[in-house]
Image (cartoon, rainbow, N blue to C red):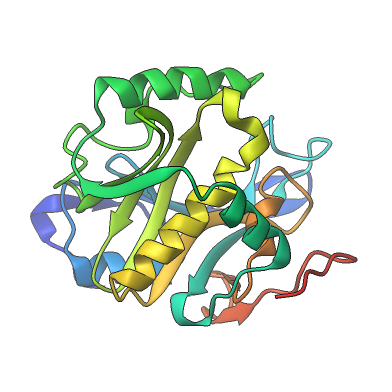
Length: 251
């Protein structure tokens, strides 16, 4: 992997043992990264929060781990050309058809910060402090070329996604929505809009973040057609993801 020597600090791959499970994790601090290098990092299972890029094999956060047991992390991606709507996603798309949206390069406004404060009320524990837990104050240009995907009900901002973008990849960093719109499945809706935008831009891969092998509140990400997952500690091949056991949806 080629990176600029004056703009990064990589850790060695670290290991720790928790409740009998060996956990691998690695992080990097990057001031700036080019499109080709960012594509390589996505392809190898990396995510980012601000200037910190990271990947780890098991989740140990107290609000996520099941009965204190680490949960296997599944980096996810969707080849954009292979995506099709499920029946439930098509229903969400139709239900939200009157909402407008746009995709812009820029940094969050005061309205975005107000939406974030409303969104974080849904967290009972470990609520994030700020949008800048996830992006930098120079989101539009450093360390990547960041985008904002905003959803409006009339003039009211009701959802927003923070996104990384290259000509080849689109990666969702963080999504937030207004709590008054819980009935509209805006978390899924913003993902559908991101995939639609990626297709319009000619992007090859959409990265929705990660889920867990075990059931968790990220399971909605595992219900998308064309989904692939990566075990970056093993063969480094992206593999088709089978639907949640016992759940199927017609395309």
